Length: 304
Image (cartoon, rainbow, N blue to C red):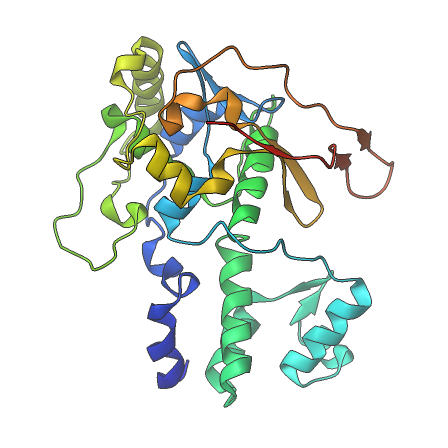
């Protein structure tokens, strides 16, 4: 990347993401929480009730905004035109050298474009595409994609999980002090919550999984840090009003329910008995193609 791009990136929320991603993911800890995930409510079902990763958690942990418009999914033709314009090469050449295959752009090719292009706009576009594709699927879409991956990973026989696992791992550290590693000692200006922790790779995964299950099974609600960001309920809602919206969150063709009325304690309120979870208005699973789920279009805000 050019010196000019390196000078600009630290001032942007996405530009810092590669530096705040955790080097080690505690697979046993992640598995322990995946076992408690319920896709119908998109929440972890604990002995004391439900908890989930909320929109304000995304902003506090990763430092990216949860406001703004949803990304529109381009048509295949629009996508290909955009890619050829970005690289300045015909699609046939991009396919020939593996830069564009199966409708996807190579992250390695995007990073090479950052290095060789002289145009700042091209460098920025290529860099952000690489970051979003390899780390996130950013802002609100980060959460929708992670919800979907948690749902898939919670099914019998699934042995892997995708999504922004730094977000999930940091969320566990924030709300469950029993699982926290040592915090970082150095002072970093505008430090995100993800940067506060330095997870270590466990030596024996089987023993670690057994210990994590035991700790979580014996835990009570008094051992949960319900409001880890030290925000009063009114202040949190003023800073992050979208965290209380009830409806669907999307990541291109992925739509997941977002139900903050089931996790009121995480925004500083007393938990009432929640209503039945929102059900899809339509769900289709064609023999060939993408599984499609559509939720009601109406969305309301919690009244506080």
